[in-house]
Amino acid sequence: MDAPPGGAAPGELLGVDDPALATVVDHQALRAALARLPKRERGIVAMRFFHDLTQSQIAARVGCSQMHVSRLLSRTLGHLRHQLLADG
Image (tube, rainbow, N blue to C red; front, side):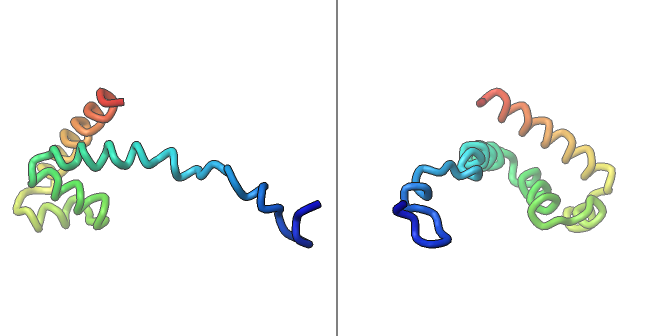
């Protein structure tokens, strides 16, 4: 009865769970785990997942082979996964 025509009542808008809120803890844990990585590995992860570079592009930038970048990413992501599961 207190809703404006065609709209929701003010009480219906309060207390709604924000689905993005559940990811805040995960983001903070990932941020901390990334900060603990050595600078080179942190840079490679950033280039791959935040700057969307291919392994070949990363290899050219850091001066190694694409295969080595692949191994570094695999090892680093495994390390991050282990840290996040241990912390959770």
